[in-house]
Length: 316
Ligand SMILES: Nc1nc2c(ncn2[C@@H]2O[C@H](COP(=O)(O)OP(=O)(O)OP(=O)(O)O)[C@@H](O)[C@H]2O)c(=O)[nH]1
Ligand SMILES: [Zn+2]
Image 1 (cartoon, protein in one colour):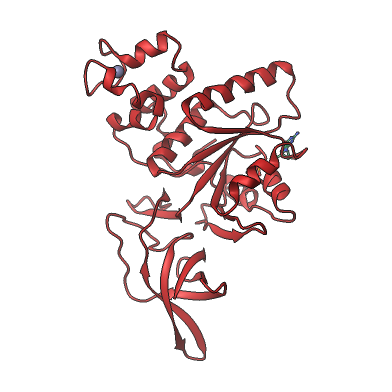
Image 2 (cartoon, helix red, strand yellow):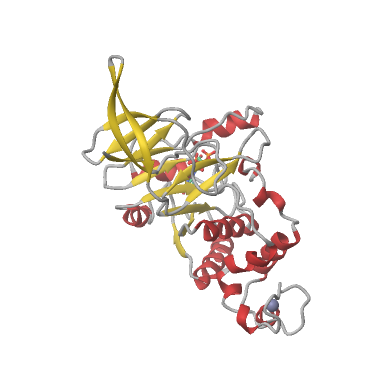
């Protein structure tokens, strides 16, 4: 039988088969996936093949195969080994929620998220929330931010999870897809998802509180079917995207507007720092590239912003 993993506890998996029924499944023997040193071979979102077997009185599914992943997000294991923990697989898109204040979302956080998403090959939609509370100045500031990211090519929606403004647009984009919601604590993820699906509660808050108390419990993502043909992967305690190890010379490739100019720099290995005849530096002067984006880029290249390599629980 073919199914999708909805929940994982590390040794047990809840798999929804094509016929719509849920089965408790386990893995038989050792499972290895090329190139991934992972503590969990199978993650939420994985498509698996399993067959039912009688174990004692119980009928359980035995997973024999994982289908190739379109993408996956990981985090480093808590125990400092080189191992990674796969949080979720096969995401169609991620929504990153951003607010101007309460809490402040820094552009460096947005950019790091976007870069990681590019590396993971996960499309991102930026949600600019709490539109109902901003004054004229703040509205302008927000509008500039929206313009900045739209120019690069990212989809942006201005909304208010509280009043419901533009919430239907988000819902529309979710139909038929598997989505994840990310953003700093307090930006309104739970409020939004609850507005999209009445009575549905994300688990983010309780876990991040646990984290504040220093309890590094391993958290597992979980997938849910919403009533309108959408799937959501809830990733408790995860505000960002996990980690990606990137070489300095590939970071620029994940800034689409820098990547587009790469061929115009004098040196084909230009890092756009102090090299002569750099097309990126020129574009900055001409105001065709945003300074905030360039600053995020430099921070990542110089390693001033190491948190993108670290545990995502440290994101803020
Ligand atoms: N004014 C206003 N307040 C909002 C809006 N969306 C959320 N809030 C409020 O912001 C606070 C935090 O919202 P949550 O939905 O809990 O935020 P969250 O992102 O889920 O936070 P964590 O669970 O900690 O990750 C709550 O008091 C919400 O009522 C909005 O559009 N406008
Ligand atoms: Zn350059």
